[in-house]
Amino acid sequence: MRLFVDTGSVSEVEEIAAWGVLAGATTNPSLLAKEDGDPGEIIRRICELVGGPVSAEVVSSDPAGMIAEGRALRELHEHVTVKVPFCEQGLAATHALTAEGIPVNVTLVFSANQALLAAGAGATYVSCFMGRLDDISVDSGQVVSEIVECFRAGGVTSQVIAASVRHPEHVVTAAQLGCEIATVPAKVLRQMLDHPLTAAGAERFRADWESRPEFGDWLRALVSERATATRD
Ligand code: G3P
Image (cartoon, rainbow, N blue to C red; front, side, top):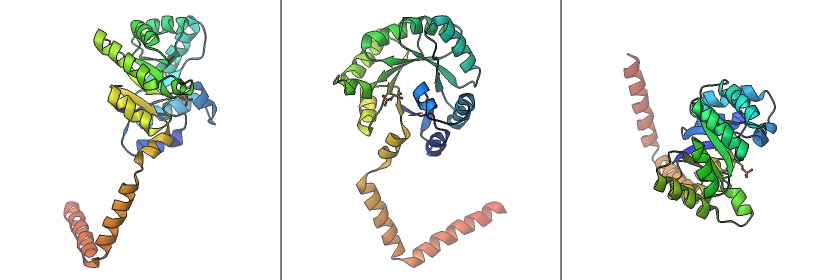
């Protein structure tokens, strides 16, 4: 499963991209509304940083408006994927945009039936909102599992994005169920780093090594000899 970052913040993308784990990013109008600066510049910068698909969402409510916004957003950068909200108008826009070769992420999908309609319209990606399903006491794992199963059984090529990810367990569930992608807020990606045994183990390695100062001298000399040799 590939990891995207779900954010409108360039600094968050800079931070997480430096880890080397990012395959893409997703924004939405709510995330971009929290940021200062020109949305187009933000989207372009995120595209450059992740070097993979970056979803930017249309806001019109009619197909013609969605299509016009989608074409314009796509022209911001070759990595832009047009995000379209699930609804009748969004399906029509998805059909038109994908027919032009523009990748589309259909968002706000909460059921397997909606996912099948989005796939039928040609969606490149279908985003199922796990956290918002859990918020209304619907088992998000069950819904994601139905979507993945329906797509696999029918040979659907649309990729499933686990979205509205609220905690690391959502990421594990999405991976176990076969989602191609999870789009994860920076806060949750940071939580995924942590394990108390990792921190304790690293501290123990450091302390044991430092108990032998001559070992530190040896490693520094090894690095320095190599640097000298490769300079020559
Ligand atoms: O990927 C969709 C996401 O941004 C929505 O998350 O936490 O607002 O439900 P949330």
